[in-house]
Image 1 (cartoon, rainbow, N blue to C red):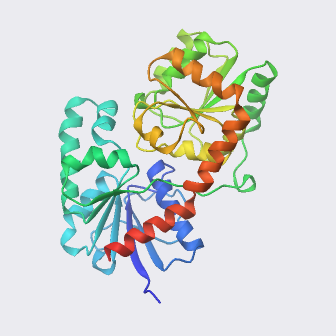
Image 2: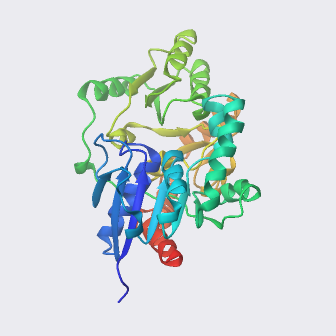
Image 3: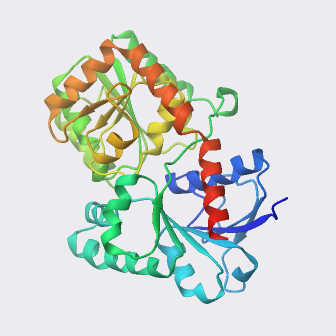
Length: 351
């Protein structure tokens, strides 16, 4: 019998954000599968958040990382801690969740992107293995590092409706009212930054009075999007519900889910929509082309509203077909169980 692996997972916080949800899935699914792993989550924040089915410690210099077979980091601060503590870490695994230069460019500016992007990548040189969340990302980083690099597609656990906090009655009534007026309800769930491309959907609503949009999420772009909504005079059909811990509860109210990102490491909410059999429209970027085919989603050309409209029309005319196809893809490729087994293999290879 294989000895139990001791894995320390360092995360910035337990906040309900994509990279943290991925780690939650790996840990909780590993426990369900009875894999021989003892996880300890080390968080840099003292705030409560996502439930992890393992021991949780708040980071301090007194933590002895020599006790663990592998230290698994996620994010620039955890990566930097492992870089500094490398002398006391047996094996270091990094999961890379983003295209660092594009992400920093859209979030800040070109100077920050070049300086901190290079700094972040240099931190990885002491790691034993880098895991990207898509294959295209491995090609993106290979010229920058000599550290062994591979990829594992993200996955999510299927949530059952009875375990999800229900939608607020007032919001449900609003969506029902939109439907009663013959509107097709589009949905978006994301952190609202320019890189997420939500403005493209608003511009489409400005052309199409038969469409409505529900946006779940918050972020620095929120005020700009609200201003654009007012400018386009679509505020009666474009609703911002804010950040929701129970975002998954809203998927069943969407006729179509839209993923209009200008750049994306993976797009976890796309898998969540797939798990609920919601047909999806995606921007035509390498990440989404890698994950899905034209038989499973429709694609549109970034910044071309006519292309977005064509992709949406195709989905609306073939909703049942696309809903079934994307759910089958989720079940065959992107479940939490598949994700946990792949990381277990990586941990074993490192040890």
